[in-house]
Length: 343
Image 1: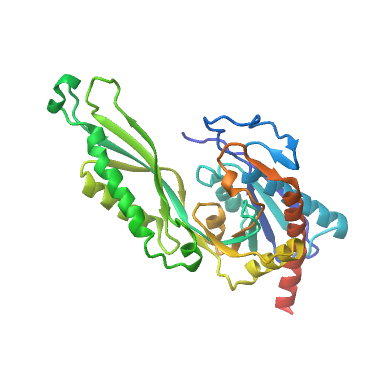
Image 2: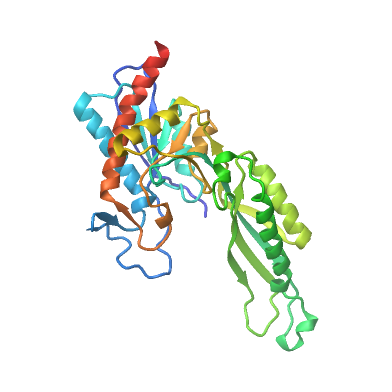
């Protein structure tokens, strides 16, 4: 649906020097729906039980946004100001394409680095796959069920497309070049998540509509991914109609040897006594909006990605506290890192 209003919040922690580098903390506050499977608790409760905050969006990613807010407040209470200005973007519309962060960056993108506290289990995501939402329509010929040979089922015509997409996914993931993405079980998933066909049980369906999500390789443009996908579908069903709707996430990468991910790793290690891994992710995120503008960006946050979009979502309060303390260390360390580089 067309969007004519977009709400978000910007929180700024003043810097001690206008010449110091600026750090962005970016987190989304929009959530997906609870789904149809039953929850053990009210998905909108926000209750604290057994050391966890429970509810939709707790892990993905309001826990990360709250941690960032508390980190900024702690630095202000301790130091009065950060070494360089810190800006927290609390955005909407991440789940369906990233318009919130895009709009925020259109207003102000003068940042030297960005941390996105998505749930990563305190590992550091330096590479993310892209994700493109697609829809397609397969035509058929209607007929009475008793005379089905007079018609042509759109469902039957779709089946070869489904098989071809499975093979395309297998082929794309057979030889993954990027070392971080290669470690994932399925770096670039391709899913048909919705099918709609037929209007009556005794009539040959003359139309099938399918929707899904296509993974984009780190070294691939969205246009290249779309072209390869369209070729596979058209070979299986030449008159299928295709469209690209909803979220369109490009891939992104921040080099491992860049000082910023190394700094994020060091502050997390100081707080958790565990050296985080540098990892890739198979999901799209707002990280690519920063990388596209030349702003080094990584994702690091609490555990819980397996609960994102799932039933019984929750986040550990102790992990939110650990993340807040890590971000506070990052805010201070980022200014010190930049000062050392300029001296």
